[in-house]
Image (cartoon, rainbow, N blue to C red; front, side, top):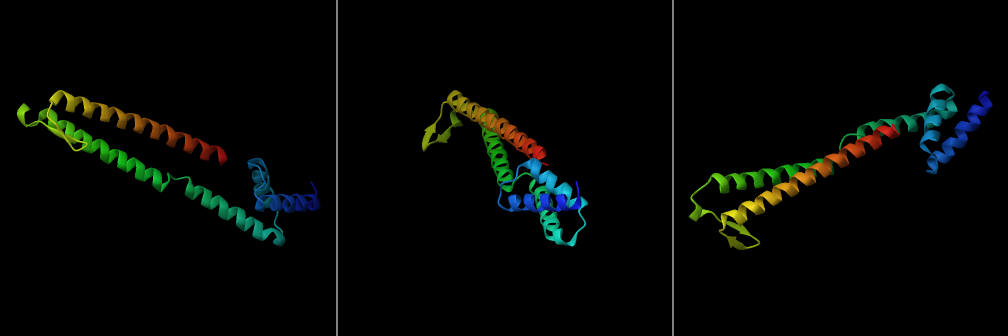
Length: 144
C-alpha cells in the first residue's frame, strides 16, 4: 500500500469512525494505520484513537451500578442470614415471631420456610449477577 493509499484509507476510515459507521475490524485497521503513519496531518486522529483506547481500558472495570447492586445483594443476604440465625438459635418457641408485610407470624416453621425461600432467591440473584458480570467482561474482552 502506497503512502497516498494509506492516507486515503485513513481519511475514509476516520470519516466513517466519527460518523459512527465503522465496524470493530475497521477501527482496528484505523488504529493500526495511524500507529504506522507518522504524518503530522493525522495527529488529531491518533490523539482521538489513543484517548478512546484509554477510556475503553478504564471503563472495562465493573460499573459502579453493578458494584452497588452487588453490595445491596450482599447486605440483604447478611440481614436475612442474621434473621434466620436469630430465629433458629434464638429464644424459646413462644418468643419466636416475625413481622412480614405488617403481619406478625409466630409459627416458627412458617418463618423458617419464608427465610429459606428468601435465601434461595438471594442465591439465585447472586448466580444471575455473576453470570451477567462474566458475560459483560467477555464482551469487553472481545471488543479489545
